[in-house]
Length: 188
Image (tube, rainbow, N blue to C red; front, side):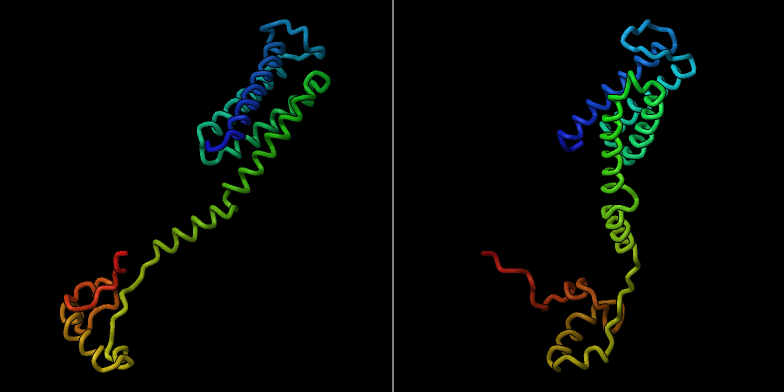
């Protein structure tokens, strides 16, 4: 992760996930949580536990820098909000954290998702780098536009060393020429 804001998000998300364990502990009968007024049954206790694991796993993926962390964060925030709705009077404060998590997920999708400018750049770069470029062959018609001395210099010093009688148009063809002037900038 690159920013302090992301680490703060991981910390808040981890605390939120740990608070979900309180609902799981009450629902599964592990502790008698006097702080929670609403009753939580065994089935809801399991859902609270799954929600806690989802939130903790999602923030773990964010901390690890996994590529599609935003998808896990979005799913965890929705799961968290669903169990919060079942115990609204006790857990309504968690809605604010879920809004923050969903905002982070939307940002992650916009910045790193498959429709982002970054993904579009990567697709275009990959396509450009894998595209086959055929080496164009220099013909006599191409040399006809050059002044006579330039064409003769090219033919006599460079083209004779290439595989084609006139040589490929490629910087390496010019580098093969021992008398061709260097285009390197002068040192200051």
